[in-house]
Length: 244
Ligand code: NAP
Image (cartoon, rainbow, N blue to C red; front, side):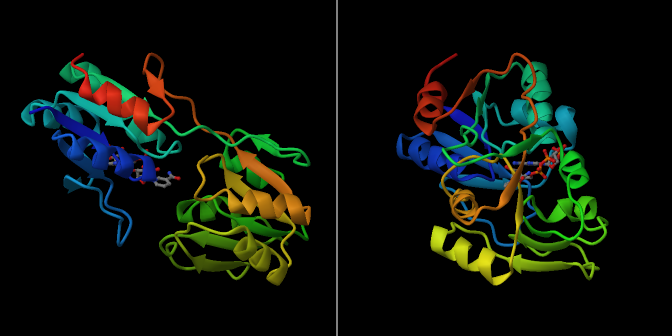
């Protein structure tokens, strides 16, 4: 039986696990273990870090894994770097599954920046910002004086929550109407987001376009050199079934 490790935490990882399990592949999905109540994929699940590239390489050897699919979120850069190093150490074929990034449509004028810090540097008083860059990014933004934030995340950020930040907990998927209500209700004028891509969180971009919000888009970190990458679950499925 083929044994595949999927580094997960995304809808694509869950879809891939479901398809491979249905084909009789032995699938283990690895989750970081940070989200309180994660959506669980088909097949086996393990949770928690591996202890860096050497830990993951040892795990791959011990589990006799035939293939490794890095289907983590495009911004999970440390895990992705660790996967590349571990796959090389253990001699296990690696594929990255990355959903495509978002593209500007007619009427968009996104400001693209390379990092969260670069995004924060563009903010000036008296803005009201819709922040969807994840709960751990709050310390980068909250110190910007005179700016108010509506920060949306799946799990609560670490306390204390600064006075200029209101947190809403939601894991999506979101609707354009819901995003419109949120933007209007909180009188938001700027959206700061990461180029996560995918359909589940795209509604905010549509609503921002309609309502004329300024959009600051944080670009994805680069993949490690030499790692083959596909954009669709179908391509990853075919690759994982192949012997390499
Ligand atoms: P990260 O910064 O790249 O990873 C930090 C460390 O967490 C890694 O070095 C690894 O620890 C552990 N880790 C991360 N993903 C793991 C996984 N799938 N299985 C086992 N260990 C994992 O990652 P992150 O940005 O915190 O993301 C954590 C997880 O959340 C990922 O699985 C990702 O797919 C998911 N996620 C992330 C985002 C985002 O915006 N970053 C959004 C949605 C979902 P060791 O070095 O000890 O192995």
